Length: 252
Image (cartoon, rainbow, N blue to C red):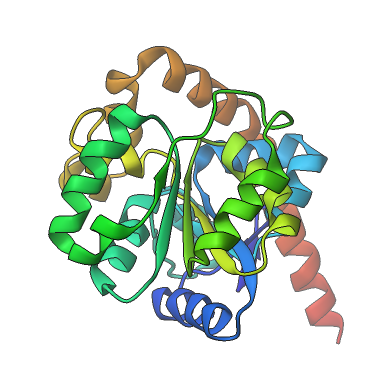
């Protein structure tokens, strides 16, 4: 893992899979954050939220821009690994016992139907709609008992950032085992009902945010505005930290 911009990233997809598999095999528990631009900006502003992200097993990089920043500042070659991709990768592995939490029955029904075409076992796996409430109002002991009764390897959580990360952090003490992974809009993408992911050429050109703005203008413009406010000071701090590290290294 490597820390950039106050987030502990795991960029290596094989290591992501190995850490998840090892946690499952050992009967351990934890959560994985899918850190996009929203999480990146919030971590710079909110110390409590930063602690939530720090409490994860690791974060994967769901931002096409962070690898560019890392290349500009450090000269390192890193790659994006988005939430919809890890979701699809682990579904296609056809080896995990899974539970799906979040969104609405309207989305969960078609999602289950589509996913069981990839892995027929999914027809027998639970898809659970969570109540519409604040993160403080969930009945975490009851949700934890429901999770433990099924004993999944992977618990997919789709409540949207920053709510889903706070939800996983609060639920963790109430479950015995399993890896929770927050996948945001992936449920919508794979249900085929609502917002679809940007075309691959837009993802390659770092233009996925444009597609999202047109899909959900009010929500995404607010998020983009917040990202733009936090971006300059964040980059300045990272460049300054790199210079300090280089200066210490030159003295030793």
